Length: 173
Image (cartoon, rainbow, N blue to C red; front, side, top):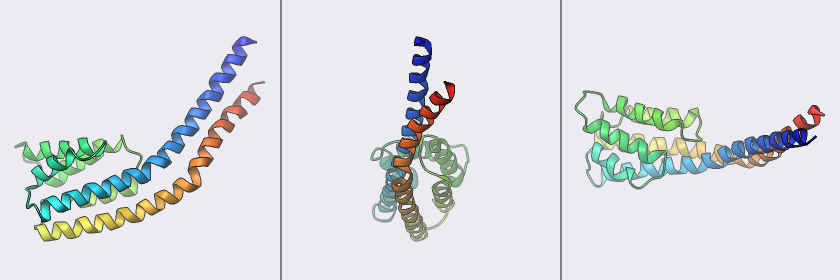
């Protein structure tokens, strides 16, 4: 009897934790998109007003942001300083993809950042700024979508986690 009760508590707790984790993902996504927008704005400022070389702009910006952006920018800066002959697009792409596993963002945001990487360091300063502003506007649309999804699904996942755990416990008896 005690084993069944303990098992029920574990299952109910696991369902609840799963539901709260899914809700957390919905809550973190708009905040991380907002941070990505801030990161691009910071890079735009470094490049357009500070005339900072791209590796240094990445290094300066990395200290201003939380994860996953801090390590992504630091890795991109290190990659650009390394004399291995990789293009800026390759280095940026690798840094973004490595950091992506630690984020709550979806494929659309990944595509926007990877597309931005194709112009970083490959075009003149004015063209890079135009592409950064385009990426910012695309991310703002994604942020609006993420906020809408957060409002719709965050509470649902919390409740669903508890209810899934309760359903499993009921089916066990």
